[in-house]
Length: 400
Ligand code: MG
Image (cartoon, rainbow, N blue to C red; front, side):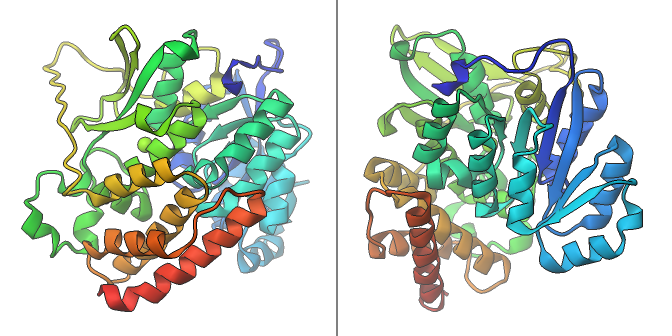
């Protein structure tokens, strides 16, 4: 595990942060953490897909001088409105711009929270430049886990998970020898339809799927929470991040989203990590690691009743979890195929093209059609990703 590597930042100065994906839900929570810890953290670079107005506001608020806009038209608009940014701002565009920011000489740590596969190249570039990497984008490890882990190890860079469950596992594993770990259990809220009878699931609308009980997140991940594809992707990530076998990673339903993981050791003892369901907790942990400081949101309050419930996951009702486990066991590029097919299917569901229950059917079909192999390069994984997207898209008509 590369997490054992020591930080390269002297305690005497602030840790300098680049935030890729500054305008989304993770980005907003990260800005709250940064605003609360200006004595310890300095924002030096930001990027987003298209919302340059919001980037300009953030740049003014935090005095950021390096700004990236991924989308070409939005980048052109940002350049035409350069006066909205602080004087002397360097604006960069496209994937090359994001990759340049990830390698910014002035940065110590890069937080990658951009949606989809866009973050992959910048994440690898950050590690190659010896930066610590805080990872919020699931696709990076799901697609290119072995390459990312190898690069972090080679450069002695820290890889800090920002997703609440993996950040929780990271905290529970710290200081414990790897050989003593028997099982990693990730908790799942169960999403919007946890308590719905199976027959009602056939008539779920995109609006229903977007009502998550505990977390406020973007539309894709909220649908993934309802199908448990999100938990499936997280199991795949956990296997890669913590260097365990597929059968050592499992999930349990925990409706309250207070316990984020349980790590079981060979003697049967379990450690859990608890905090309220706000992303500011894992984000702050990742950015300040190994330091601790007062949190942005209130901690758990034991003067009020706090019930914690755990239930097994019914994989018959949540086929995306079963498919994720099969994907982990298969290895190779199967996780990339699972991820790509799921993205296509979820987008089609949100557009009203396929029903909710067709999402796992599209993914299962795609997994059976695209050939699995051991990838030799990131480019090879991306080629499979593209093939899986085509295969899934071709299946949408039949899945209606
Ligand atoms: Mg999560």
